[in-house]
Every structure is written in C-alpha cells, then in structure tokens.
Image (cartoon, rainbow, N blue to C red):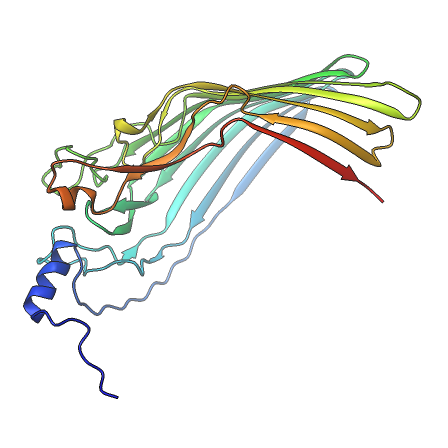
Length: 316
C-alpha cells in the first residue's frame, strides 16, 4: 500500500490558509520551576455563647504551565495573533471578616471579603479559531455575603441568602476584543476597570419550608423558593451583546412522606415562570472570518426552561 499526501494543494497554499487561521508549523519546548509560600492566619473571638466574630488572611497560588493548544510560536511574525505557549503562576491574597450568630430560633452569618489576584489566568480567543491561556495581570473581587435561617412556628422555617459582588480587572490590557471593538496598538483591548463576566452585582435566594403531620405515620412537606440575580455579561470578552437581564427564578416542592422518611413522593417544579437565563455565551469560531467581518454569530448555554418532575424515594 502506498500512502499519498493528505492534501494535493501546493504547500505554500496550505501554509497560507493555516496562517490565516493563526496556525503555523512549529516546534517548541519549555521547562518551569516554581515555588510559593502560602500562609493562612485566622483569629476568632467568642463574644457570647451565641455570637462569634472572626477575621482571616490567606494567600493562594495556582501553578503556571504550558498551553498545549497554542497553534503558533509566541514570537511568530507570520500570523496575526501569536500563540502563548507558557503562562505564569496565579496568586491571590484573601482577606475576610465577619460574624456567626446562632440563637434558639434564628441563625445568621455575615462576611465581608476582598481578594486581590495577580497574574490571573484566563482563556483568550484570538479572534479566528484558537484560544490561548494568558495572564490577565491583576483583578480584585470584594463584597458582602449574608445568610439566615429562622424558625417562625412549629414546622415553618424561612431561610435565605444575599450577596453583593464587585469583581473588576484592576490591570488587564491584553483582553480579547469583541466583535467590531477597536483593538489597541498591541492587538488586544484594555479591560482595566471593567467588571468581569458572569459576576452580577446582586444575587441571592429565599426559601419557605413548611412540614406538618396529616396522620400518625404520614406528613406533608411544602417548599417554595426563589433565586434572584441582577444583570451581567455572559461572554468572557465582555461583549455587550451577551447581556443577561436581572431575573427571579421560582421553584416549589410538594411532598407526601412517612414521618421517619422511609419513603416519599414529591412533585417538584423548577423555573416555574419559564425564565430564559443565559448562563454563558461567546462568538462562534470562524464566524467573522467566513463573513469577512460583515457579520457575527454567537452560541450560548441557556438554563433549563420550566421543568415539572415527580420524585419517588425509598430507604431500606
């Protein structure tokens, strides 16, 4: 058997086509040696038997490495967006303070935090076909989180959580440009001061649970819940076309069960108001290349629509 060439096109034509896709034949190798010191300090003070205050500091590190998906040399001068074979380690300094309260009928947790990232590792689309891992310089995430649980009456409890999040890039000059955005001199876009993707300012949930016996051996349990979020951008390149509006997603659960929970029959409903929630989105590879920048296409993942299910549980 004689094996022929994979392509009958001239080698120069094949090379030109691949270069248009930011791909070129290359050979590269590397070696990384890293070390890190990651301390953690925690201080706790019991004000009373029910109330505790705390504060902590921790440093974390994510190792650097090599991006095996890089399709060209970082030093290439023949493709529009050179590869990024090696990326550095990522580090973070986290500060947190808060309180925990647990009384007879009420439990409450409150925390304030701030995390400063250096050399944040992100996937950056080169605008054509490839994704490269790069270090996004610096970012800061800070906010407040609180959750509670309260027993209002026999069998009736209310619980919930709320979070305020401020997640911004403090120095990110090598961001992936979105469709029709004008890049800087370095071929990338400056996202310094911009809020990160998938980081709504407000989010949280609220739950109401009620359980009561209906006979000596059988009980009924009811739950209604709501998850909420303010608006956010769903694409990693902060494309405003992937904007997701704020929403409230409702759910409920009605169950009939044996008092010792040996069996249960439950009717469960999720996303009862049938909200269309975009979880992530991005430009489709090659979309602008095929149209020669005359148009673009997007793909995304959307949360499940209204779902109704019956659940049967048995324990032996």
